[in-house]
Length: 515
Image 1: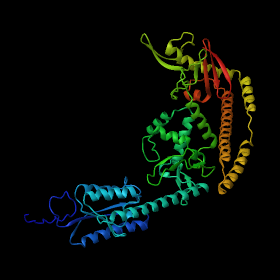
Image 2 (image 1 turned 180 degrees about the vertical axis):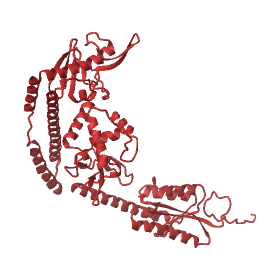
Image 3 (image 1 turned 180 degrees about the horizontal axis):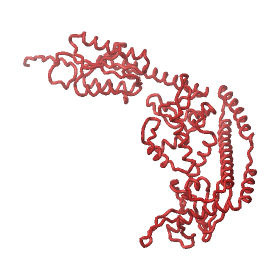
Image 4 (image 1 turned 90 degrees about the vertical axis):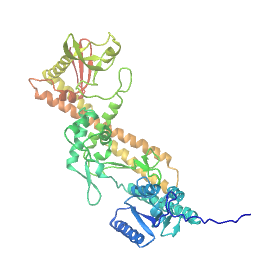
């Protein structure tokens, strides 16, 4: 047997990818604070200064960089730009050792923590945690890391639960939390309460007014952009989804529905729509209103009406309000909606209104096509008829007002029932008893209450339209020209027959005019 010569292992310092032995260990420090308070900001600066001085004081170390994330949570690493930059530099072979204050500063998520530690170990890069005095390259390192990271995750979960309970308590007290930087129309006072921003409130009022005047959401968006009006975030471009959310947000009438969304878990921090998994809290008159409850309810009714629009084949169709007669003009023979068409007959151009069914399958039995000028003139004729027979129509309008029945105590009765059920619900909850039957009653009463509010709002709007038409008839304008806005404001439906047209007004009056 020949001589055996032992060849000692080369000292492995830092990254295996390094081709030459590094004289100095390249050291990086990672530090993080999770809030932006003044106290934490001081801690943040202190940490950076501490690591800079600590690394420079070691002659065998060379400072690579101080990687510092400020004012963010560590339950995952997706938004930690500096942390991710440090990992990238490790992968590029620029770092031999990472030092940090503690496991909770490095990560509060066990999975992320261990994954990154193992990833760095594969690159022969240790992580040293000062507070716990753990070096991940030690034999006992991973066992201790697993235990400590689990404790850090429990700490984060406990903190998340405390925050969630605090929010639940504030909801139960009716205290609303709104980020006004992306909520048009409101600011916050020194106590955190919502106060109206007068300039932005006018934009909100304009959106509600134009929607009730018959404009589509897309047309409202275009108008706001055209006039240089900015969104709550200061963006010149308006999205139809943003305007729709404004129209459906109960906060503009002074109420607040709390806990519309909730956080799925403390790690992902993902928020989802609350479809009944968590309790909701409805607070009435919680803050100053920009829009009256009557107008808000009218808008909800109009949203529902537009959502049910269908074409002649029963397919759902988009709302269009480009013209006064759009989506209110129908064929008396088949019930299909009239469409506005541009005709070019032997070089002669004209605009006509034609039965949708006749357009699609050329059905001859439908009402005849009408020129737009003739339809406009028929509308003016109907107004002149009302003025010419003013006594008859004013009497009719007076009768329509008297037919409106309003139960002033309807809402009060429902509110009393809801109040009683709320007390029963609290009692059962505290005694850990089943409350599903009470919950069902509350849901049913809430729905009934909304229907009563919509009904009251509709009745108020109906009265308003009656009085407007009364005023118009009594003013007796001698000469009239067709006005798109006036037609939109007064008309609810037009039925086209072969030889005449019936105009139905929002005041409940119908007038027949010859074609």
